[in-house]
Length: 290
Image 1 (tube, rainbow, N blue to C red):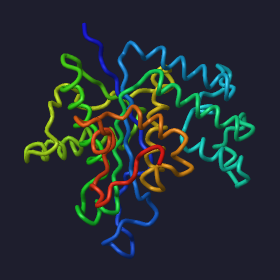
Image 2 (image 1 turned 180 degrees about the vertical axis):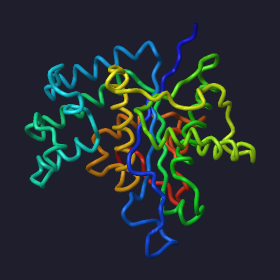
Image 3 (image 1 turned 60 degrees about the horizontal axis):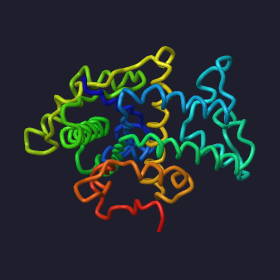
């Protein structure tokens, strides 16, 4: 029996596309400019060792234990960024900060060890960034969530078709009420299938389950560990498209993420493992170093 490929997904930013109350031709000001949806793919045989490696890292660095609530030491990109701001002397959200990290050198080591897990396990990484303000202006009424899933499903399905013949894939995600409803209402698959019927975003979607497997993080203890990597990819991508891929929020983990992004036939991740939609007039410099 061929291994099953598991693609753990998470998001950064909000997918809300509401218009501004006073300027209905513009996106609301109180939402994020970007919505990012990311996937980290592994074979099912790697599920246990990767989860245990993440748990061991949190135990050693953040004081994780069975006596503490799991989310107290959960790896999240936003929390790492808040911790760095605190260590640099800025005000920080005490509830989101990692109190166990005492200085910048310690944080550097934690992020280096996280990067080392990407290098060690070499997951297949896909990340889709939706420029919500451009989407709102160019395609009024179109959902950022639908476009993000359409591109993510296509890229993963093509990867399976081209490089993993005979294997199938399953997307795995934390329970997301809004996402689940969009799948139940066929909002997301409608966009994908309409575009495929016009000759765009075609792929053999039969290679993937038609919707993510929604897990209960209180029960799926290995899977909740691996989803942390998808959060880190999504946050780092969000920082990259918003502030630059060498900005403070992106530069620590982007080199490790960039190294495992899916590649096109020319060996490039831009437009393949990394999708930006609508496509920018000038593609950002995604190289980890100058």
